[in-house]
Length: 142
Image (spheres, rainbow, N blue to C red):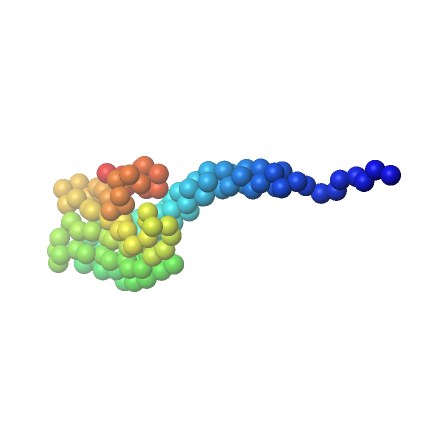
């Protein structure tokens, strides 16, 4: 009577493990970029909402502050939110320090700066230049 082989050989198992390793090596960096972009986008959405509040306060002649603009000091996306305008000035900044995520965005700052001349807002961030194209929104890559 012939004895039938049951199960997998060691080489077959090693091939499967190698394939899984290759797939993981490709997928993990892509996932990290995705989560970093998501964290950056959430923080950007949160802090950009403050620009409307600042514009409204300035048009009323009121000094913008973090509380008056409607931003909380700390949120799920930002460790700190800060509105900084000198008394009577129409130029200033709104900043958000990102509180979590991959190292490419964790503890990085998104800054909106308002120009006094035309009231336009510009966005900048201190995300490393090599990571900006991958994680930062286009309006904040400057």
